[in-house]
Length: 358
Image 1 (cartoon, one colour):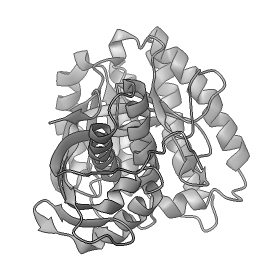
Image 2 (tube, helix red, strand yellow):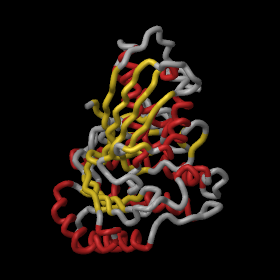
Image 3 (tube, one colour):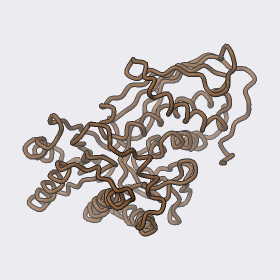
Image 4 (cartoon, helix red, strand yellow):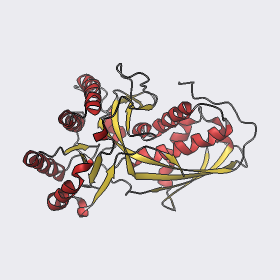
């Protein structure tokens, strides 16, 4: 157990409220496969998004009666959602060793999204990032005096215990999560900002998210991660991810869009190849996912515009491109790609800076 983020008991607790906003993120080098308590089998690099946000308010007061575990109420979009309670219970059980004062509080948690829940935008990443930011802010008010770096790392550390990818949503614009020999300070416990001179072309990169299928995934990401245990190609995949992390970092520094496209698209297809070759095997892409990819490749060939795609563990497609091409690509989306989207829906986003207090 990591002991660096433990805090002592609290003699006296007060009443208060913390309201935080955190974005989702999109991994370029994918994390697939984990061990221990939400620790990654390979490093990942991600763009932090800007407008795909979760806003979470945590009101707290001393608990009237101390009970085992954390006492909380939870509202999502203003409605009680008891189906979320088991996951929140599990999260609080995991973080209690690092925030024991929560057991002496009664929490009222209210959360809203700026994007449709279960629309393939890693809503759990934004949700646990926002919740963890609020909880760490409560702790910071009780134990002031530590450096900013400690709180940045603790927010990411706690978020990871809710959803692995949430570790990457607390800061931006580019985050590295997972140990890698080439990056000082990299850690499996929390994500760190990529600070090796991000080329200006990537600092306002755009992400158009095409909503191919907004339904619940047939196979959860948690199950998918578990199927990497004993996977026949797992070792080669983890080696590839380490290699791609270094290669992508070089492209991000130099502004090499050709290398960026090659690595990003390879990572997306490799992620889904791992799903299709696990036991049991499964497919999360849909026919329209492939239609979009083929149309994108043809458009890039015809126009030489550096548009590429990535995929999360689902059917939806993220189109990534420099801001200078935004108008042309939006026309392409409307003319050729909306027919492949559920109800013609898409979302426009861009690279962002992470969580913030409201």
